Length: 120
Image 1: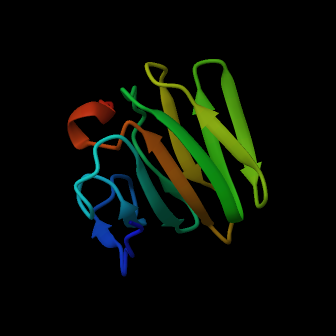
Image 2: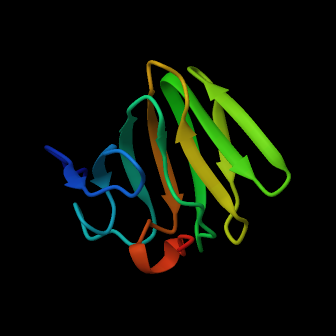
């Protein structure tokens, strides 16, 4: 049977400025460990620490611009575009444009602070 997820859980973010993370499906809001789906809203100039996660992350940008840095370079992902960041590879996200960014993040398996492995 289908089940309604009436509202997300707000999760604290990492980075130099507060970013809104609303987890609809995942370890916190639904106890789901195989996938997480969250809406993110990053303000202008937000940068998070780099990470080497144990999950694949698929990101769909809804508004603004999301910068995705890897060891091989960086990608600017705009509204209507998506990016995949494979598990086990270093990545860092930021929102360098004046409008910030709003995007959907899907992590497989689900995001966990214990498996994200952020830089110190």
